[in-house]
Length: 138
Image (cartoon, helix red, strand yellow):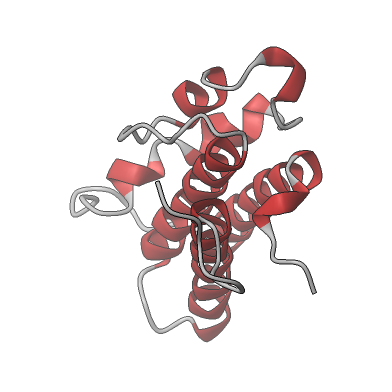
């Protein structure tokens, strides 16, 4: 395997940047109010998923092609797992499906969307704290 060129982001950094982009997009959707908030729920779940995968890449474990947040967390060695609240994972997990295929479900209320966004932010920050290499050196 060849080394990355200087200033080229690592896979962990690319995945973490995607997580932060999903958080930002969810925040915009919630603030704007012109789109179904279930989309913000999906983006919040995606932010947590991508952050957890970034941490796995940073730990040189590779990221499996799965979406379950608890399943992703279980891939970390106990000593190096990010300190996330599993309640946050539990409220975010359903939105990988419900956010995309929710035609028969009521939309999220703004306060529910905000709760999902905060849960995702906590997961993202927990990964950043446990694996500082997910963010580029400044």
